[in-house]
Length: 126
Image (cartoon, rainbow, N blue to C red; front, side, top):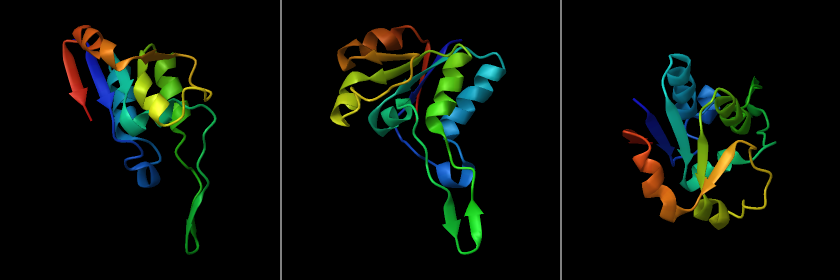
């Protein structure tokens, strides 16, 4: 059964886990043969910006040198055949409509979300 993952909360656990938990879960579901789509809303639309990076984090003498690369993680998900969408108004509100966005991204106006939701029997909001 197709599932649409609606991701609104951004950068959850990205320092300690080096990835977003829901993007990671989406990779795992797809690898297990699941059919899904990913809709980025709210602050999570920032994941659609390409070439973003985070510097290494240093706490005392310890350095977390493998920072999260969420744009690459979402692009890899799209490369596995997962449709990736972002809400147009959320991109616009954050000044990202003119940014370099993932090639596989489909920008969806908020008014068309009900039509998108109809394509998926299950919708999970995170």
